[in-house]
Length: 499
Image (tube, rainbow, N blue to C red; front, side):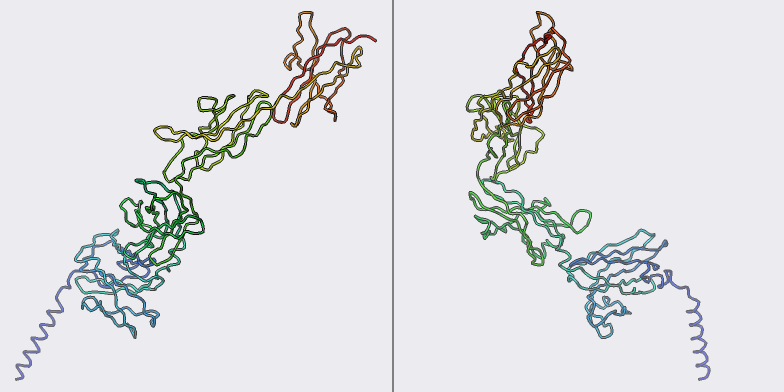
């Protein structure tokens, strides 16, 4: 009996010695697999919480090979009665129950397997995962479970908080866009710029147009929306990530002559947003219209003001717009025409032209016109306006008076006018021989120019000095109006004599 006990003890000792001398399986120490908040460990984990989803990033942080049997991401809603739940010692998903007890709190965690039987060779390895269906404004806990050849290890538990619905929708902007006819049916267009998950098709959303015959009765609603951007006709996350999206949509409407319309959006959480702008739709044809009657500016000029009005449903653009005029009725583009090719061709955008070079005291006939940018260059005219340019301001040079051997008094008379006179001048020169016709201009007068003193009776005067005895002179008057128009008087000849 003693021999048997001794033999068993020796055998047991040999087995223990053999086991103690066995080589450990190859693999990293599990301590290296522990996730650390300061990224010292083998993996670094981060999460960004949005309204109802979270973006996870798991990256490899060591420059050495690792054989990973399984890498799992766990997350769960933070229990209300636990400020900082302890990390569970055993990964619960391996049992298939999904139930874990942390202190007094019980929770149901979600699990995503990120890696199975993979060899990670170097840094730069990363996995991204997006968890959907989360609650807005809620704190979640998350951790990693790493399993290698030696077993498994669980990381520290971290937290993130999803944003509230208000945070996501406060930047939602809705715009009422154009209206046009599509297959003889009115279509109203709108656009929305919002948090992209706010228009999640899985949660439900409404893009629509409300309309009515007056601004106060937008009581009809269209929700048969068609998404034009993205072209796929679905709401998707913007290319390259991000959480904003621009979406253009339209709604077909019943055939009607006119109405007011406004775009709106009801997002995934039931928030309603209406565009700031309400637009008018009408089937009226484009119109070229006068803003006001022609403004006569003198004997040779007039100011014209026009506009282009269109409230129709078709997408119509202009090629050019401006004014046409003639000295006969029914002016057209075959007569005198003005348009500015550089001006923006916008509907309901006023424009103005200061027309000069007209004949004094003459009747003119003028229209506003617009030409559409279509195959036929369809042209529309306004009603015709007739205006008459003013007669030139009459300016009369009187005979010089008080003539002495070296001086003479000059007087000119300005005829009646409502226009302001800005400049008054006399000009003169010597008569050079019997063949001199006495034509007087600023060019041949040279420096022989002087200002005149105005008086209440419409005259202006000056005294000419430094004249030569028995030398014949020619003298005249000149005025310039505030509108830029000029007038020259008749001329007078005189000869200073010794008295």
